[in-house]
Length: 502
Image 1 (cartoon, one colour):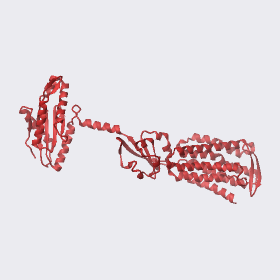
Image 2: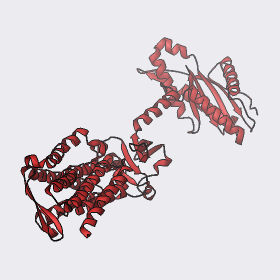
Image 3: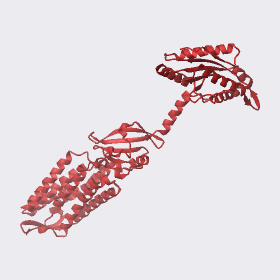
Image 4: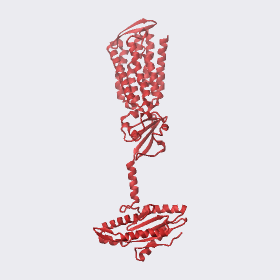
């Protein structure tokens, strides 16, 4: 008999879907779909037993099995829908328990219908063609179950429709399948309730079998559902950090508003595309630890997205704006290498540059000059005018001498009233010319304080180094210091140059 064979096939198909779902429980919606498949199997196999029943007792036994599916299929379809679009973790056990209270009561009432007749007021067996078809009088709880089932299906449709309207284009196909699968039970139910089914037989099990096929494709064929709940979550959308989610097939599964703010070219059209195809819109994040976009600096972090079984389900890329931190780090680095008063490089920065130039000279050769400078009798300025004026004098000197040097030269405050100068590619005569200009400029330009000029001179000791032999920067400074000592011994306010050495 074809109808009986179809019911048997529908029941076995439901069991097969349940078994398959058991191996995919990490997929959102898989758990309620598993129980829904079992419910469909009960409905189909119970219907098979019903058409073969010979007594009203056998009919009620068959209906009890059927109602394990009929009473639960509505809430299970609703749970499948919301778990798929919102994530399994969003459905609490309390909500599941509340949804199943009425179905459990209905099953008990069907099994005990002979006692109270609340489900069926009467059960009469009639022959309709080749089938034994029971004519059932509808009791109040039959109608209550029908209303409850339709409300659950309606909620499933509304949840899926809302998600489909909000979803990126790549997510709409599985959502539309989910929507269509939720509509199929209504079609089968309408045909049966309107008396349009052949021989008055219930064809709803066949519709539910088709629903199982459609939902299985939506849940398990389109793997984008694995991460869709995260993409749709409002917390994700409102995160300050920019987040992009990549699925296990290295496709864009979603990104939040902050990510699209950084990369305006990224729209929902890119969802579902491989990251390698989007090099024009976003850089390859796997190659970066930091990223600079529009004057902002972002730290790139990567983490594996795992399912409940601990298996990789994709990759989360997070971009954290660290611009202020980077600016602060640069500022601290600058402060560590800069004299706060004169804004010149400090002793540490000068020695680092001197070491670098010594290494370069050792490789490529060349000539450089190193000078040590001491302001003459600077202590008298502090004692006579105060330390504020002494600070102003140091600033005055730094400004004057900076204007005498090339951009490639280094003028640094070495400490106290001592300064140093490093001049690359400069022979002895050129170095003497520069230092003499610095000396005369200072002598001719006193600091004016409250309308009164305060003169200041300086003594210079300089050494030039030529050739490609490696040298010791410390030795160069010691030799320049000896030349400076000689300048002071000879009366100060002069430049003394040590004889050039190689």
